[in-house]
Amino acid sequence: MDKKILLVGFVSLAVVATATLIALLFSKSNSFRGTAYSEPYPPAPYFELTHSSGDLIRLSDYRGRIVLLFFGYTFCPDVCPATLAELNMALNEIPEQADSVQVLYVSVDPDRDTPQIIQEYAERFNPAFIGLSGSLNELEKIWQDYDIFREVVISDSNIVTVSHTARVILIDHKSNMRLSYAFGTPVEDIVYDLKLMLENPQ
Image (tube, rainbow, N blue to C red; front, top):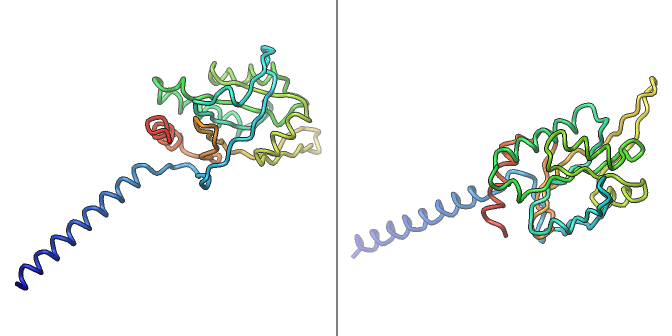
């Protein structure tokens, strides 16, 4: 009788341990690598800006797709071109799904970035990238809505740079902010998250 009880105990323990291991493995395989927003996921603030073509580009136009939103400027010496190059590399890793992802590059330097200039700049990295600019009043609201720090800095030699938040924001197919990526995030981490989200939309 004692042996039977002991055997049942061992079997039960083994079942629980196996179930726990499977749960942990499943959870790990489905965890994102970017910095996640807390649930309930915040809706991405709506915005619209006039494209260089003259068309009005609305964030809502991309509902049903993933949007990678980045704020920068065309005179940026390092962070912005590096980030756009990395986003292009990420999309190149998912060629069959790249059409399901849209990169939007919004200016933090409207004094120098016209819609035409920023679109031409974005296209240098990928023809499908969309560059957007507007008036200071239009952009200030968008920066505020997305919690983007932005400050114009003029050096002693009269060189103008713009300090700004350098994070890529991933907006899911339901137009919710899901993840963000700090500057320097490995491209493979962004690719991993894109594949996971595209294969398992929630």
